Length: 192
Image (cartoon, rainbow, N blue to C red; front, side):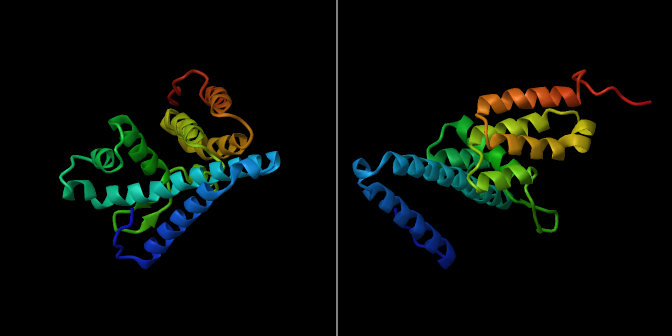
């Protein structure tokens, strides 16, 4: 549970996580009012969503450093499977999400924003769940390159805004309709 840290900042952040988790586990839940229970549930969900966004940064950094190879693993997904005891599909999904929603490194090592910055920011704010984030990124990824280049940012912003008030299923339906409106033939016709 406790590890030796090279970074004081990381140690303090993890200590805060442990303290918060302990405080939540110590709550006398039966004594809370219905309003308190609903507020607590909303806050717990927002914290869990934001934690996923934080994990994207960690996974993206591990991937960019090639840490998996240093530990005898063929890929970052294999490393995650071993370290976090995930099934291979879950590990691959997390690496893909980190590639889309975590910070990136340029050729010279400079930190670049996530590919889907609006989605990443909303997830870090605790607004989007994993399923909603995946709906948005998958929808934009499936657009033909010219449509994505012209409308991808607008579509990302629109779907993030809609995700504040709809479920992942409803968001997927909306995303399909919006993507269809942007590319009604399913294949962008080449301009001559």
